[in-house]
Image 1 (tube, rainbow, N blue to C red):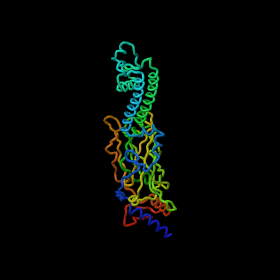
Image 2: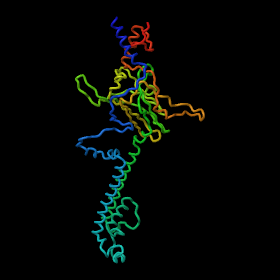
Image 3: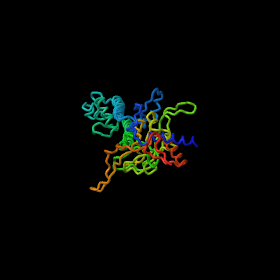
Image 4: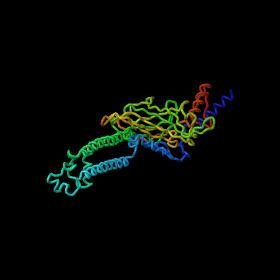
Length: 386
């Protein structure tokens, strides 16, 4: 019995001597390198990759993922290359037909007298062939340069170039539209709080962060999910770097789906199934991990999928704070006002600095012995009253 009571005193001491005093955690881990940046970009580079040719097997997705400057450059190079490519064939056909002989030129005597009918009208040089190629492929047609019915080779080439131009334009336009409609663009209006906080909610330690969408058109059927990335050591002593663990995240309604029309706090309850169950405030100072957060849904305006990502590393998780309320009723214009100046603001709150496991142990021993705990700390163990 005495041994159990000493366990109670030890657990209470671990809780009370480090509890209900606000601690701003300063981490020794100063590295800011993360897997997912604050704006949702994946901070990953491939080294010694010898199979880059596999990316060309899905050329459309490769182009959609490329940066805009490369897209514009590829469009310009592709169109000019196709125009010059077909211009060479137009020049060869006209040259073989004799259109470039001095007497057969548009201002020459044979063409003026009608003795010679050119393959393509108004052809003078290779520059004329380039202009003809552009007019044929883009169907602009200035009126002068056109294949005549006396040149079957030119007619066949004209059909081939028209079909090729339609396919090329459809492909490149599809790339541009797909790039403009990507979820990444809509996700730019989804805000994540700069830091996450650990505090008590409904009797449990919780990790919380805030999200908001500043656009008037909502994200429909919004859902949140999280992933914890850290190094894990197996029972055999193997270290698994970048080990991913599912992190259960819920909105204020207790579900992972929520109505995303107001800023909302997302919460992870630190319970027995949580990977943070044994972590105290002291442990947090030496931890190295990254919490990756993903919010998914559909854009109300377009019906397209939306995905917003962000992350929190260990030094961005603050123990003993709670987010301030940022929504109030504006009686002047009878609307609900959201003050985004308070989006990242927090209040210090009384929070036990022990782990959730130690907190549960204190509660269990309290129920077992019927001991009342006075959290007004006195000495090293507080006041224990029967």
